[in-house]
Amino acid sequence: MRHLIGLGCLLLALIAATAGARADFIKNYEEWRRLGPEGQAAYAMAIYDVMTVFVDDNEFVAARAMGLRACGVSLQLKGSMVAQTINKFYADHPKARVATPYVAFNSYLERGACSPFINEARKEMGLPPLKAPPLPAAEQ
Image 1 (spheres, rainbow, N blue to C red):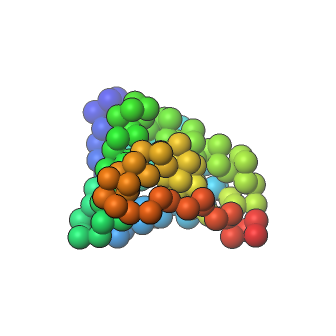
Image 2: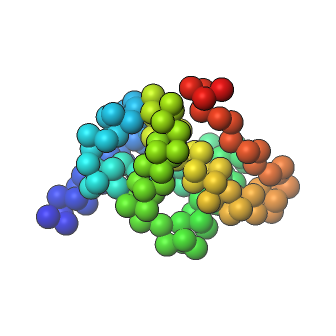
């Protein structure tokens, strides 16, 4: 069973990576919900994995990747934890259930729990700190 879960994680990571690092082939909460707990954990970790790799010379992308990696190590993030964060976003913002899980990830992890780590990386690189995340479009 672990082998199948690992294979599923690998496939999701590869699909997410080929999606231009957008990780948005699950389009909304309804599709997210249908993944079930194991699928959500795998998808959530694929988002995290894609966001911790930088593939161009953009210093902001590099700082985000380094900060997310430090956050993951410090918080000992697991796929199920990242999925819980995405679920919490959808629970806290029911009108934003039209948004992708990536938006939830960005709002509650990248710009939430992991923002101190990202800001530390940005500071070390001479970059300004992250701004607070905007409200989901459906709630503006």
